[in-house]
Every structure is written in structure tokens, then in C-alpha cells.
Amino acid sequence: MNFLTNMVSFIDRFSEWSGRAIAWLVLALVLLVCYDVAMRYLWQSGSIALQELEWHLFALIFLLGAAYTLKHDEHVRVDLLYSSRRFSDKHRAMVNLSGSVLLLIPFCILIIYASWPFAATAYAINEVSSDPGGLPYRFLIKAAIPLGFTLLLIQGISEIGRNIITLKQHKESKE
Image (cartoon, rainbow, N blue to C red):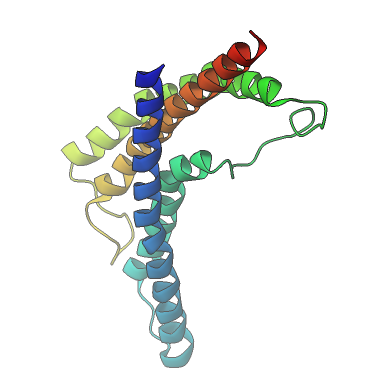
């Protein structure tokens, strides 16, 4: 059980660190959007590359921040039964464990498996934006898909460990 506790703690610290690092992209995105809007509306000068960079930053925030969001239990969920006052910590842990094992982990593996060739092909052909004046190195943003879901998978493993610890503690308290 000590190994599981240490693993959960290590993964949580990593997700916390990566989430805080990714949060700086929000500031970069806000500044970029303000600059882009000012250039377009005040000086009638726009840039396709800046607009694509805005989309890419948003994608990075969403993809790479998902593990941090899961760690803080801030993701969207349908709480029909889960938030019921009748659900104890044990029942919540069972719901979370079931959801992680049956849905989260397989979904992450599927997306990683399906997106890896997508990113590898973009790298192999040195894919660039199809828009004139767009960004080069399209493979970088495509590589964020398997990377983001790998981070989410790792945090999902931490969530499984945390729920196993909760169930074990509940069992021990009954004995």
C-alpha cells in the first residue's frame, strides 16, 4: 500500500506541476488575442499565423491541461447519483474506480493509439498549414494529442490508485 500511496503522490505532483506550467499559456493566449484584435480593428492589419497560433495555444491548454483538471476533480461529469447525499466516500470511490477502469483508461489508450500515426505522418511529410501565411511544423500541434491523452492516462492511473486506497481504508476501518 505504501508503494501505491507514493505512486499517487508522485503522479499528482507531476500533474500539478504540468498544469501550472500550462496555465501560463492562458496568459500568452490572452495577450496574443488582445494584440491580434488591436491590430485588426485599429490598424486593419491581420495575420493568419497569429490566428492559427491562437487556435494552437487553445488546443494545448485544453489537451495538456486535462490531467490537471482531472486531478482537481474539476472536469465535467453528470452527477445524477454521485452527488447524492446518500453516496458515502466508499460509494464515490467505487463509482470513480469503475469509471476510470471502464471508460477513462480505455478511451485514453484508444486516442493515443489512433492519434500517434496521425502525428507521425505529419512529422514525416513536414506538414505545414494549408493557409497562405499559416504556421509551419503542423506536426507539433498534432503531437499534442497523444501527449495530452498520455498525461490524462497517467493521471487516470493515479485516480485509480487513490480510489483503491480509499476503499482499502474503508475496509480497514470496518475491521
